[in-house]
Length: 216
Image (cartoon, rainbow, N blue to C red; front, side, top):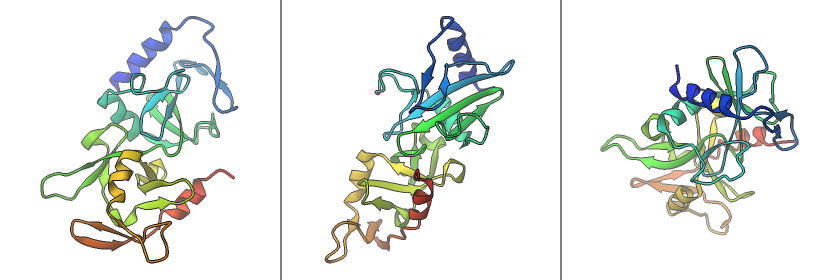
């Protein structure tokens, strides 16, 4: 059993009776640790554009208040799936299950946020996401980086279960932007990326996934 599950259950039981009900973006109200069915608990989370995970109802969302325990983060994000539970699907589009515990997630942009490039000696580089280090990482595919002019952000392929596309944290995106090349007369978006001595054309194949995920 996930160690952090027990810790969160203990935290919820320690909350005073009549704890305040919150509402995410005008959606359905909830109370952290609520039990809609016997032996079931529900918790609600939020991930920002830097890949930091918070309890959704935290008043202050910064580095001090975000979750930092690697074991918790790895288990939470490795179990992340689209929310098809019939509960809070609009307000919290992703769900991480732990036994009878339901952990609902909403995000500022994407649920997966890449934070670091991992270089394993002579092996291919990988992108790590959401504070999980090597345990939460995907192969780095520079040709599939997608710079989006609409919001100035950078995206990269992510696990299919988490939507197939993830956001690149701004600090890492700034580092990678030095590798981009722009076509003459087209300064808005790069056409190629240089990586490890190779010049690669950007495929832009992630664009349909982002359009499909955009709200109507």
